[in-house]
Every structure is written in structure tokens, then in C-alpha cells.
Image (cartoon, rainbow, N blue to C red; front, side):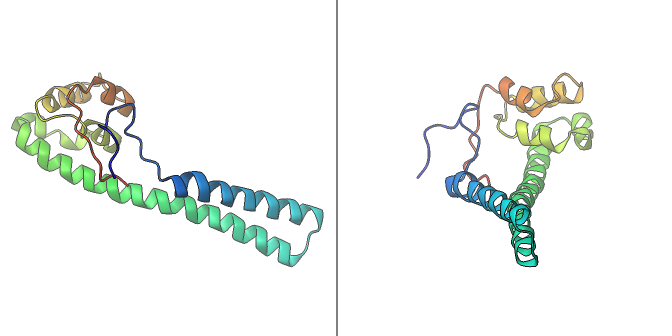
Length: 145
């Protein structure tokens, strides 16, 4: 089931069970196991705290690794798209565009991409949020992680 039309205002991706249920459960578990360890230190409580901390690390890296893989795909997608849309001298500077900048400009339509890339390469657009705010023809990405 898809949301309404995707825009800058609503494009952030949250998975409610992951972000708003599992995350808080793991934080509460860490807090409770840490409090129990402080109240009554022993090997079992130390192990429970270590596991609670390990689950939080796992939670964090599960998201980070998925996003890193997605960023690699976006970089490839943008390389192919920009190779088709940019003049050769401008495309030759592709590697000067940081991944967060590529992630941001991917939401732009083909007609405005060359202008945005020119501003990124000139250093006038640096942050992803600033790039996204400049996009007029927003291209939704419903397949994000």
C-alpha cells in the first residue's frame, strides 16, 4: 500500500515496527539490564547487559549496512543516469560528487539534473537537504530501504 504523492516533506522512510517498536524495546531492555546489574552485580546480570548492548549494536548495524548497500546502488544508478544526461566534460567530474549529494539529487527529474549537478560541482550546493529543497520536479522513490 503506497502513501500519497511523495514529496520532500514526506519522503523519509520509517518502518514502524522496526523504528518505533523494536528500537524502544531494545533501549528499555538495555536500561533495565543495566539497572539490575548496578543493583546486584553478578555474572548472569553482566551477561544480560552485554547481550542487551549487543542487540542494540545489531539493531544499529542492520540499518547501517542496508543503507550502505542502497547507497552503492544509488551511486550506480546516478552514474548511468548522469552519463546519459550530462555533457562529457561535466560527467568526467562525477567522482567529485559525494554519495550524500547523489542520494539527494536522485529525486530530481532529468530536465533539472544537469543544473543541480553544475551547482554541486561549483560548491554552491553541498548538503543533501539543500539539494532536495531546490528540486522542482520530485521523482518519487518508493523502493527505498
